[in-house]
Image (tube, rainbow, N blue to C red; front, side, top):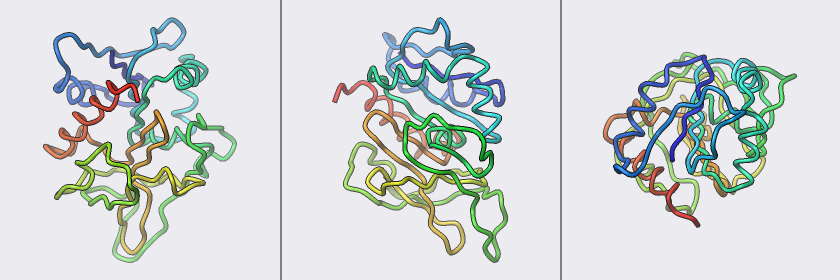
Length: 210
């Protein structure tokens, strides 16, 4: 079972539609509006657009924070997309007083201003290999992914970094993998066939008990 968290701050249609395509008839995808009575999924999608503090406030209001941490400890595979990836971290300079989910030990910082580039970073960019992990081979095939962000995750340990990407002259972490948690700063659901291939790999990863 695949569940997508509705934080009430973004449209889930494109995410649900994209993750539905590789599912088999025996699989199902549901939207969760509240975590209190939700059943534990095999794969939890944490999408999001907007501010770190707003995202965490929405998770708290809808009783998701403790539930997500419980599911994480029980082995649910969790994928964070865009803001969802940042919420996996410990804290963000965008909302310094707000604690993140802390599923990945990391801080979130604003992209540095560079010549000829505007923030937010909007558009297509490549992902560059930063690890020996092979779970998501489409990250390393020809083509770009679609980004919309002003902040980026900085893990405490480089061991969890899957890929880096470039913004002007600076590199930033564009995907991470730590046991049963994966995060993508870009939007697979908006990245055409390359994003579709990655989503199929995420579904396969969720079905793998390893």
